[in-house]
Image (tube, rainbow, N blue to C red; front, side, top):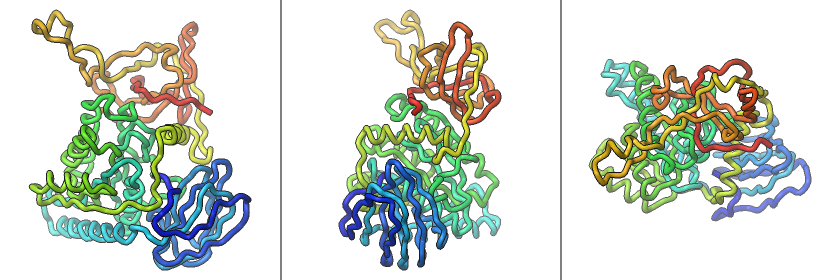
Amino acid sequence: MAYGGAPAAMTGIGSASASTVRQVKLDRESELRIEVSNETPLRLRVLNGNAEIFGTELPPEIWLSFPPRLKFAVFTWYGATIEMDGTTETEYTADETPMVSYVNVHAVLEGRRNHAKASASKGSDTSQVQGPRVIVVGPTDSGKSTLSRMLLSWAAKQGWKPTYVDLDIGQGSITVPGSIAATPIELPIDSIEGIPLEMALVYFFGHTTPSNNLDLYKVLVKELAQMLEKQFTGNAESRAAGMVINTMGWIEGVGYELILHAIDTFNANVVLVLGQEKLFSMLRDVLKNKPNVDVVKLQKSGGVVSRNAKVRQKARSYRIREYFYGLTNDFSPHANVANISDLHVYRIGGGPQAPRSALPIGADPVANPLRLVPVNVDQDLLHLLLAVSYAKEPDEIISSNVAGFIYITDVDTRRKTVTYLGPSAGILPSKYLILGTLTWLET
């Protein structure tokens, strides 16, 4: 999501043109919305009072450095004074926010977690004890990922370890775009670094829209859900903490079908609909026969603004760069060389299921969306992102999660070698690589 639009009620501060130290006094239940300069970081601290960023409380009187292009909002429940040093593209205060309704949702979820924990301690069947499984839905740029982040951080602050599930392949808030992923949230999410990647369970779809291969997308969503269900088995604490599921902004036609598919696949019992009356009405009607599922309509934040395709593409490029180099260039990726013969690259989907001669008369061959297609390692792989599968055999690739990603920088067909950028040095954890359509030009 992006901040920077005009809210219903706001106090203008203007855009800072010089790097000056300045203070902003926030009234209770108001927020300071900021877009950091494209060129330089912004330093910020809380001088007095209490404030938070997307559910994570800021430490008092400690300067934090926010990197260029970052968009965020500093909210206070009871009032605070914020001090800043640096330039911003946009900064303004708003006193109309939906935060009270968001924290009310958190309070209800907290009650359900406590009920699930109490039931488990009484010896109830752990397979039947289930905390809240929240799925956040709504159109593109309605604030889904930010609301998810708030609910996770508030739960972690109360001592829970909820699971975050990200099904938004277009942007990717856990790892690179084109992936679906899940990770436990053990602490309030870092205001700058974002969602931790260390314990993430990642499946690589390979594209930024599900329409490239709907069947594969559904299969991977199901694989992720089944793996999480296995992890929850016998772990009453994780089951009670529940999960928060972030979804794509595609809400019509096939996108709507995928929302219903995710609700069923993850057994979601709370559906939060952001900023879309029609979607809320449709989901309420279709889920009315499921008494255990609550559909709740929430207002989107006035700080959310629409992003065009070019801006979204640029955001994807930044996410990929961040995977290798870190948010503030604090990672050290390695250029590695491998023999072409040591790598086995596959694309998922395409090709006929059977030759035309084997089909009934008049029938056309149909592409198999789950077919593994070997890919030649040549110049066509330049500037593409590949996933490193944990599969031990090719037929395990679709059902296996991935260890990470590499970026192809050179293919030398004469020497029969490949040069690639990886997060670390050393031999790849698997020889099986998955190719999608994600490209990246390193800058």
